[in-house]
Image (cartoon, rainbow, N blue to C red; front, side, top):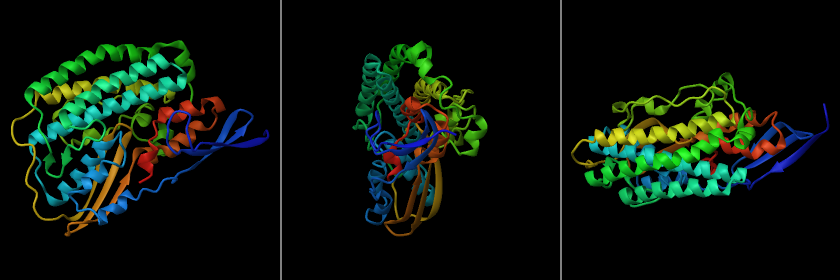
Length: 359
């Protein structure tokens, strides 16, 4: 056993502008352990349910994380709707599904841009974010926001999307596929990128299940677990299978996200083709009383919401377990045995969202 050295990594990540801190234990250039420190920013969002009326809290829930904004608002709304036994209109369920998949596309494209920047491929970084801008334009046109949608409400959605806009959306996303081919082709076929990703940060199927991994991290290890299979929103009406890879390394996690881009476009096309007519919200009366667990699939994996209400205008308890928090044990496991130079790439392929942890 060689001499061990402890190197502080963070709280600023080379790529992610978020307060992530690790104490890396090294023997020469090899990582033997990593000790995470979280909780640098206490935002108190879960406590705000005692200060905001339950209908207003949707705006707070959406700000748990900017990138996962719509999904956080959707999870909170679905939990309250379950407690109050609210029947959400069919059209609203399909619109929620479309916005959820647009959120997944723009999150994954942002990840590809960050990964390209980490590799020093600035042209690829610009391509990724240029494609993401076109997706954000669609989000802005349909919801009114670009990152924080503000479209979800208890009982449905705040605005409708016209049939013409839905058709234009599908046409724009179909054209986007050709540009995505260029983007994903470099990540999946370039030899230098493969050298940095293949065989690095391996998480086996058994370890992924034992450590409770979720999302692309889990599916890249061969486990076809996806909360969209539960059938929330309009997913029970759509046809899809979870995207999986078997190698469990950084390259496999990259491949899962690449294939999920195309899957999301296909799901949006299915939702548009099956879009029912009707209202997009229903009137909500009274106050919730009861409790509910709600599970959704964010771009980074399964997120769990717990809401407990006592019949007043204020929620009694709101708790969120985000995918990044769940994936921290797996991230530590992947780091062990890696070279020090691989640490940024391993962390990046986990796709951590530290603001989701700081709730």
